[in-house]
Length: 278
Image: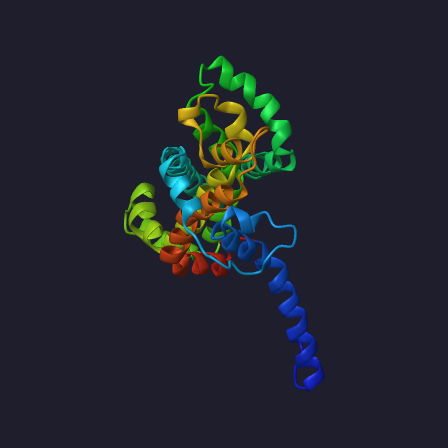
């Protein structure tokens, strides 16, 4: 255990913690203050640490003249759909791996997790012809399908880790009372799995929300773009570099994630500390 009884130890600890905090949060700080700077101040050769004349012009431009609201709706639709389906599939798979004994169980689980070994870009090469042959290119369904493919292995393992800690005696007692397996799962297991469900749902939601590579490759139409490629192609393209608009749009795009954590943090922390994430 770390001994902080001496003044020197406390000073070193605080210095290291402060340096780590500065390293982690300074980009966020710079994002926020840049969004409130006027263009004349934003493009100074010597940057300023605080906006001298704060302005909301970049937010008005991002929300009023661009496609940001439409891209937010697209991202919400795709992320909520993929996170919901991924959570529903993973919870049954994780419960099956944790509480049932059958031939090939470990082999199937190892094969499922091995998909995470390959780089996402490499898997896109094999996934693209499948999506094309199904006629799903330039559809939101293609993105939902792709995000489920990549989030499902880790999500299944999260639920597997969680369900291994659920006492099997509780399940055996319900079986002895004549309850079916589905009734046991839906009336006994599911109510005590809320922290794991929240954790997996947030994981799938963030995976989908933050993706750039697949959203740029599988979506072509401008009206179907999600927030990641939408911001990049709107504010930072070959002929334009609107850093103020990009910063303001990034803050707006981060709002759903921040709000989700604010409302669900209690269950998320319980899910993580209960061992659903290892």
